[in-house]
Length: 486
Image 1 (tube, rainbow, N blue to C red):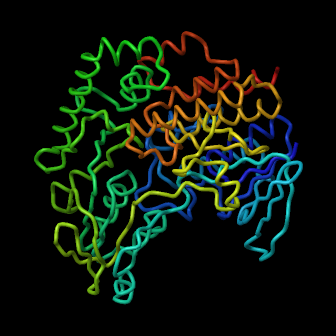
Image 2 (cartoon, one colour):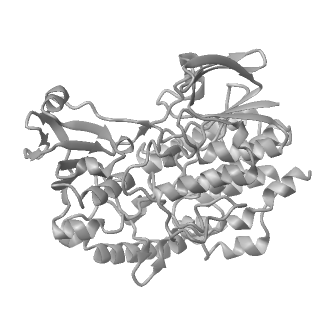
């Protein structure tokens, strides 16, 4: 079968390797000049690093280099992905600088219109199956503030953090960072070393956890274990989760209260006036929040100025920004860490409407399979802290689907499951779930469910150890071989 994959990030590369190994004729298209997706040099903002350690943020069959630090940089992560392509020998199947500009469903598969940027020409290619791996964090959203034109005319610049690639551009400038997520804090910490001033505007404060919590240890031992996940109410809980969030809830609440108290003290949040309003368990509402090293120290030292519960109301000549608090701040550069749009731009409106509900949420069974659109699957629409492992297992799920080996529920049952999952996501996150594509807090559950569908798993001793030890993707390294032998 001829398979086209749109996107050469983690999910696209995992699908290319797995589907190639399954005997399919695979082509990967990406408009960037290098592989990596969010790790591409075209999108790497200053200060970008992986969330988790190199031991966990990796594919099951390829460790990161021993020379890498515990937490790799964005450039090192991109180099690792390039090495993944070379090690498994499928670089000849990747078409870089090539954008898919239209996809039309035909009688057997899809007709794709692709544009080769370097050759300045377009062509039409056909595939029997289409894998959408374009990334849920690939289309930046930048607010259109009143006064943007006057601000620009005065020399001001507004851009998304993923579009700000050169730290030197902030040298001696007044920089405003909008947001409080990972990219906002990463870039603020980085630019504060060269900028004349660095100000962070947080519309809503979120809980964050240090890489190492004093007295408790590494955050991975707290968050990336089965016991750690059990602290969050799941849609389909196992027996322990039912107990821990039911009759044993006092134990669970005490654990969260302890972590909250220790984190608040370690980061000096009370002294800085940065204690979030909600409980600590809100940390997994949408995306897990990890502390950027050095960020709070620079806030305490005055090198970074924080405004909580604050938004920009207007950009003005000066250049400067007017805030919802009534203050005015000088601003040469406004960096917007304001999220991304989840969509597939090369699909027409009819297909888009078939893929999503009235709120734009993607209706995908197991975050992969649409309800009504045929010959297409999605990859990377299960964003989590186990991105590489989740992408690999998702690719194996897709390969088994194409081979006719999956015993799926009926279409009606899949629709009912999708409905309940989206309703649950909305309830637990207040709607902040990136249109159904983020599964923070339930990384292991997602892997487990796909493996159950595949009828294969890791050994019981390893699964038992995962209750108290962080997930190690290496434990899953034989899954691909075992499935291919069937």
